[in-house]
Image (cartoon, rainbow, N blue to C red):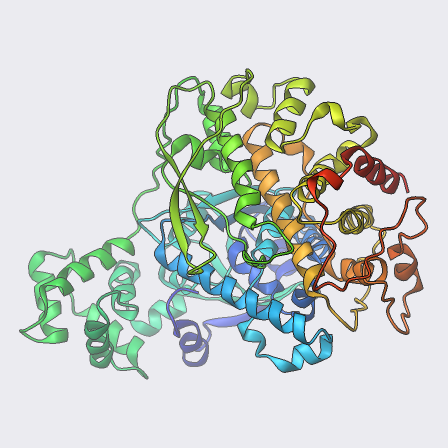
Length: 606
């Protein structure tokens, strides 16, 4: 990430710029009593993108959380203080939306392959695994895990790349290291060292350390040359002009040529400086737009002093504003500050699938009602916006958010965001958001740990996206995963076949859990949501055994097989004779919500 090709160039050409170090020894030998490590969760999440079997089954988020927990705890046990940073979603960024659209198309291809092939080994051999989309829920799982080990900060600057803000923040916090590979950091000022997560070994506690000073010395430049170096190493301009600039600097020795070029430039830059640079690169007939492109790029890559500009909202104190700004799971910032649109993406959910409700129609009412609760007591009635994927052109578009206001009184923003609200108020808002009737449900039957899970599944059954048997399989997986009945320390016994609908159910539950987590975080009820740690491999086995009635052949793990079988529960089993291509979907009138809660309660008591 950062400048294309720069990491490989430094690795192979600059002696002593990269070396493997022992993390434990580095921490113990640090000058500070509790040396700080800034961990870039965005880049670290790609460290877990190594097992395509897990993706094909729906990921084992419980094992990802377990591995991350162990690693973070070991860093702390060595004496380090952990600070976490991640790149926030910026739905105003066109490139970001294009990447998300491409991921959706890749996900549809994956689902089609599973629908046709089903055999796991054949799927792994059949397609180029690089075409498979990266599951953003891995990053969200890491973010949730990180909050248990240190402060988590999100960066979403439009003016500079997020890596610049992280580097500034690391300097401000006097961090000793930044764990996360981004080549922009190679030339950014700061007393911290870079640890590349690409070469991270969590078991041996070793990592590749990058020496910034050796890189600067090799190119014979210093930190004030960096913005101009970045400008020409990865110029952003019209394609025709970019080709000419690239040709001028060459391809094989581009970085050396760029370094020589910037060494000859006099600082500070003036209008005459830009004219001279444009003439040297493109000749006297350079297009005027090239001057503007250089200026924009130079400004983008120039580090400014850190400024914290917090928008003011009537009746909100500064502490509450900080809660909004730093709450990584909530979209209260987008709703209240109204400086960027709310974004959500289906990824693995086919918007045109006939056996499930359109994902946008499932999520949108929850967002509309949450916004209504937040804005109920404010005079602000400005239009909010939401960015969603269109099912026809498979591109993201911006739409006005039609806010739905509750017809009952809600607590003040300060009380609500700080969680100072009664149980009755909490339940009233929660049931209204989920379109469920309090009088119809035996909510006391459900323990607090599983309330949100049960309500999501009730909601999905009511919206004709899950059958009751689907929901029972999901909840049994949740219970066994969260109570660690599913072993975490041992190797995974993967199913021989994977099911397309089971995979979509896995991602549907996980996405809805994160969406509802965001809604509840907005209104002071984040405590109801546990960390997401669903086991897609376990669910595939359970779905095959209980819905498709296809037990695994030669299943060596009798414990998991027995645990996955929910047929012994004293409830009428809805065995579907139809295969997953034509699932049995209940109508609203066929769904007995009270019976469903009883089913959930019975499973939870197991």
